Every structure is written in C-alpha cells, then in structure tokens.
Image 1 (spheres, rainbow, N blue to C red):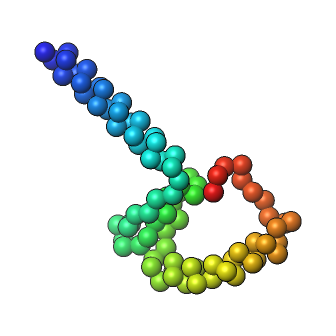
Image 2 (tube, rainbow, N blue to C red):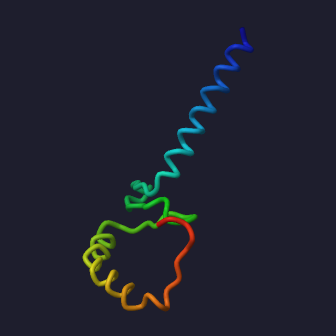
Length: 83
C-alpha cells in the first residue's frame, strides 16, 4: 500500500515538474514582488524589477527605445536566445 502511494506521489511530482518546464519555456511572465514592484521573468537569469512609476516612464519611451535600437543596430549585439 505504501509503495502505491509513493509511486502515485512520484508520478504527480513528475507531472508537476513537466508542467513547470513547459510554462517556463513559454516566455515572459509577470509577478508582483514582495516590495510591491513589477517583476518580469524570462528575459535572462534574473528578473527585471521596477516600481510601477518606473515601468510607466519606460513604456512612455518605447518609441524612443525602438528608434535608438534601429539607429545603433550596427553597434548592438544580439543573443542567440529568443527575446
């Protein structure tokens, strides 16, 4: 009986592990940090965390950032991973 329970638990954990792998490979995710900031996961090894006012200022500059990237394309490097 204990072996059956143990086997069921192992299967459940494997399924949970696989689901976590699939969700993490999907791309970006957002979370609220402990301090109330917005964290973006999936861009790199560590999350990018800014407070809402900082995100709003950055988003207001989206067109400027895109133009800057286009103007400096020759100097910029790209990672092989997906963005």
